[in-house]
Amino acid sequence: MSGLTPEKKATLKGLMGSCKCPISLSLLCMEERYKMSIKPLIELITCESGDWEVLRIKTDEVDMEYSGHSIGNYIWLETMRDYLGCDIAMKEISDEDMEIKKY
Image 1 (spheres, rainbow, N blue to C red):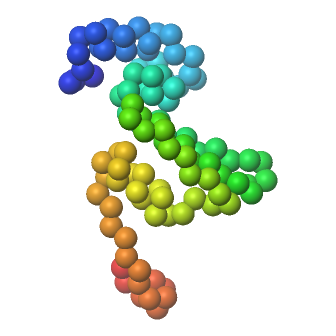
Image 2: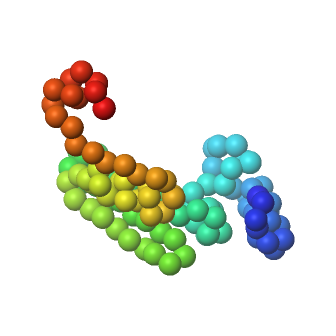
C-alpha cells in the first residue's frame, strides 16, 4: 500500500475486513478497487450463447464501453496500454513464419 495517503490506507484496511469476496481477505474485490480508485475496473461481460460481448472500462476520469460479436485484439491491447501501463507491440508475419514459429 505504498504511495497512498494515510486516509486511503485506513480506508483500505477497513475494506479488507468487509470484503465479501471468496478470495483472500488481503486482496480487494474489483468493485472495492474501483471505488477506491486504486486501479481501473475492466469488466468483460458475455452472454450464455457467446453471441455478444461487452468490455467496460471505468476509472476516475473514464467510463468507456466496447461491444459487439467479438472484442478485437487491438481493443484489448489498447486497454492494456492505456489503462494498465503495459508496453505493447503488434506485428503481422507470414503464415509460413507462423507455422515454423519464426516470430
